[in-house]
Image (tube, rainbow, N blue to C red; front, side):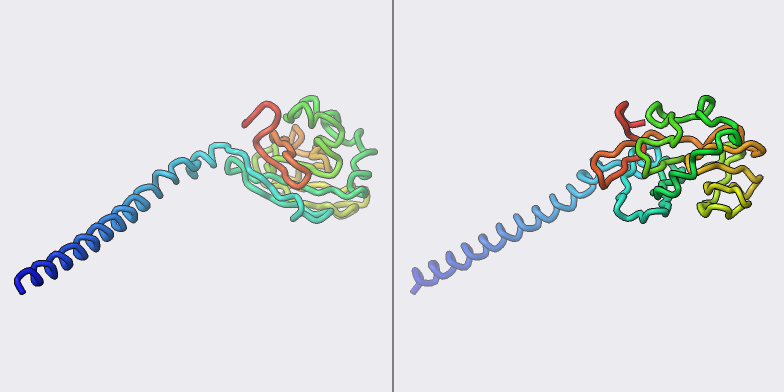
Length: 202
């Protein structure tokens, strides 16, 4: 009878030991997981790093023709306009009314130093801050919206600066230079990457 009791006690001890071992392993695994989360998250760029200038990607399929999207890069609004053929046609023909029609004295990457100030005809990418005193120009894309010969573009409500659909400033505007063009690239036909081009991350 005594031997039987010893065997029963051994079985209880063994199952208790298995339970405690399993519980300890499970608790340890949960602890490791909790400890790993902040460690893994530390690999991701912080909000400060993002604000400091990491590239921002825009899904171009979400912009309808004739519309504008305003993502933020370096805490700065960026105007991304999907120009229609009609909008592109209205960019030509008013060079004599512009302060810097060839963008000689304005800020843009070499690939945007052209009449359309862009890599492609369809997409215009601009820093959405007036080059006068830093206000945000409003879109006034409709032809004739500001006055009968208005070709469409941007109007700054603060002091009246006017820019065409390539971001070029009109004579008579307080702003002295065209809207700035940030560095950007198209990693694929559906994606715009602001803040990175052939030279790397800005």
